[in-house]
Image (cartoon, rainbow, N blue to C red):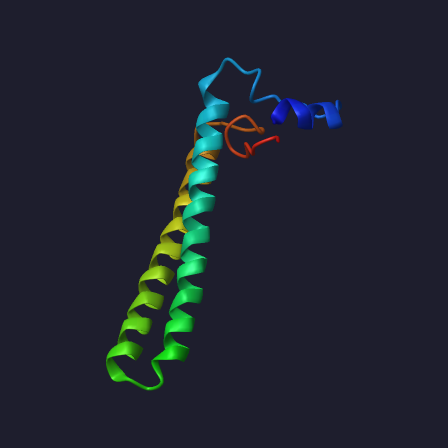
Length: 107
C-alpha cells in the first residue's frame, strides 16, 4: 500500500524507512504513543460528558461521570507533562532536528 502511495507522489521522502539509526524510530514511537494517549484522554472526556447528560440527575451516575472526567483530565495533564519532560530532556542533552524530537510518520 505504501509503495502505491509513493508512486502517486514520487517527491515524498521516506527518511524513516531508509534510516539505519535507532533515534528516528525511537522518536517516532514516543510521538505516536503520546499522541494516542492524549487522543484517548480527549475521547474519555467526551464520554464523561455524554455520561453526565444521560445520567438525568441520578447521583450515582453523576458521580461516575464526574470521576471519569477527573481521571481523564489527570491523564491528559500527565501526557502533556510527559511531552514537556521529553522536550526538556532532548534540549538538555543537545538533541535537535527532526531525527528524534519531532519525528512524524511519512505515509
